[in-house]
Length: 308
Image (tube, rainbow, N blue to C red):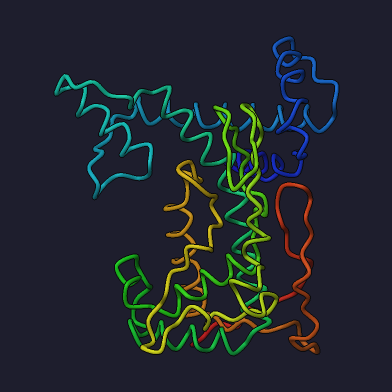
């Protein structure tokens, strides 16, 4: 498992924006002969091989063990997927829930979702450490809703309006994937007087939209309250789209949002986040590093003080 986590972490570090343009065609052809002349591409290829092998191995183990796969006893996504596929097979229904599809899903979860979600979690820690007032208000809501006797669950989401505002503002403020995934125009098109030829690559400038002062006043200030109305209710903004734009947004959006909710609520319920001893919140910078693919947080230190 550690090898799998390492490979998932290393993959984004090897990527470069050029892979979305003309270079992939050449690299993919050479890769068929196991010849990749560019170091970064070779590293990313090896990381993908590792992720794919590990995922395929785990799926094979699940299939052989043949354990109960109902929702209550299912261990993970693979169990549920195999159970659903078997049910459709017994009912003689046509389905795309094949083992090959499962291999692709599992590989994508690790390759595309693990490091991006982990990066977002680190941003949450940084921002909650820096903005103590937000952390305090967040904690107060969690404790007011469920207390301290149990951990938050997904069933608590609707009762935590400020949590949603913090999550949405963090996505807007950070924009961990500033350009999202690239898309291609299938046919000649025209938009607001601009002619867009067929096969043109389209880039969604999410960072630009998230920091447009015409939409978000004082865009470089971290203000979760901007998404809370006078009635104290969370207001979802159509202009905060961290998972992409259009029909083909990131398929891991639902999973990632659930993970972030559980992480943030359980974190503030159990710990107080403070800057490194002898320093203040001013010592924590929000100037991240953009590597051409993702927006990563700067180095910082946080103390996790558990509540009794």
